[in-house]
Image 1 (tube, rainbow, N blue to C red):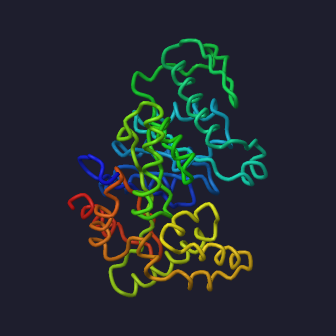
Image 2: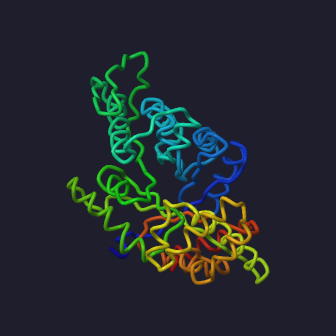
Length: 345
C-alpha cells in the first residue's frame, strides 16, 4: 500500500473567497498556474454556485465540490445540479460528497441521520441510477432502504450528456466509511488530519478491503489528499505559517473522530486534553501542546520548492493533492513554484 502507479502527481487548489464570483476568479487563476482542479467547500456558502461561474471563466481545469454535504440534500436534487454543472463545464465537474456530523444534519439542516456509511453507499447508488435515466431515458427504479426514486417523466428529465457522468468522490475518516468508498466511490477525499504512516497502515488497507469486497481494483479509486501546508519565502513567514498550522491541528485534534492518527503515533493522551481545553475556549494553550514532531508528521512546511518536493515524496500514496495554506497568503508565483516542484520531483 505505498505509491500508486500514476503518471503524474496532480496538484489542485481550494478556493477561499467569500463570494461565488471570487471563487470563480480563483479557479481561473489556478488554471493559469497549471493546477489540475479547483475545489469549493460547503461552509457559509453554497458549494455548487461558484462552479457554475467558474465553468464560464475556465477551459481545462476540473471543477469540483470538496465537499458538498450529501445528507443535507436528497439524491435527486444533487443529481440534477451535478448534471447541469457537468454539461456547463464540458465534462469537467467532479461531485465531491461528505456526511458532515449528526448535530449539523439534524439541528442545522433538519434532516435525518442514521447509519452514515450505509446511507452514503445508497446515496451514491441513487445518484447514479438517476443519471442513468437522464442519459438513457430508461425507467427510473431505485428502491433502497433510505432512498426511493421511481418517478421521472420527460418534462423533468434534462436529457443525455453524450459523455461519461461526473465521477463521485467521498470524504471519509473512519474505517467503515473508507470501506464504502473503496467499494462504491470513484474517489476518496483524505482528511487533512492524517499522516503518511497512518494512511499506509490503517486507512488504505480499509479502502482496499472495501474494493475487494465489491470485486473492484483499488487503483480505480482516485485518492485525493487534502494537506495542511505552512509555506514561507523567509523565516518570518514560515514561523507564522507553522504557528497558524499548529492552531488548526489543535482544533482538529480536539475532535474525537480524529483521534486515530494521534493514537497511532503515541499521542493518545493529547486528544482528551485538547478536547477539554477547547470546551474552556483555551485556544492558546491548545496550540502550545502541538510540538514540532507532531506538526511535521501532519503538516508540510518550508519554502515553495521544498513544499512541492515534500508533497511529491510524502503523498506518494495519492493521485492528487490539494494544498491548504495556513499563515500569510502565498503569492501566485510561490504557489506556481510549489506546483512545479511537486510535478517535477
